[in-house]
Image 1 (tube, rainbow, N blue to C red):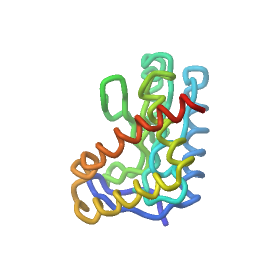
Image 2: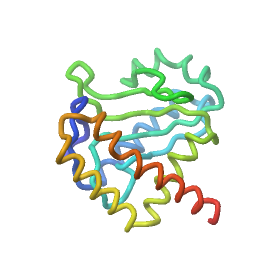
Image 3: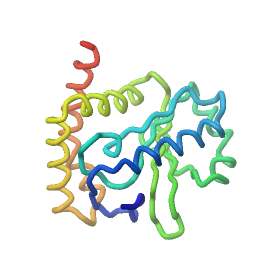
Image 4: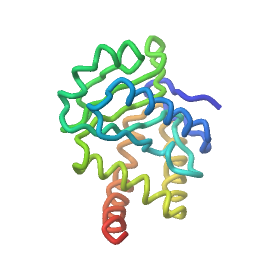
Length: 179
């Protein structure tokens, strides 16, 4: 099993302990580079959910107090293989790692303001699915069905999961508030 996938391709693999190791390694690297300009970094996304199928791309959320605090590190991050891509969503910036010359992505690093909705959504979704294996399996089955239908269209694959994700984020918020 390896980490990385060609851009635009949807290929799922069973959960791997290698994903957690890869996530922790990049988090250590980020903390060494960003020092006091990072509040927290966490492994998120499907590779952080035990027992489900996922694209073998590691998602990390980095919480900062201000985006300016990470942008000043862009050259050093790039020198370490962590390349700024774009503002992915309002209030969120995306960095990528991998064999970028061959369009293979291994890590997505989502930089958000720590403690705001985007940060909380990432953490809540991960924790909720890990605490509710039946919901995680439901998500995994949806992902496998969509991957079978959309193996070459990651945008459509992602969009097709959005209703499930939005519903689960609402459930996760209620669960978090109760716990």
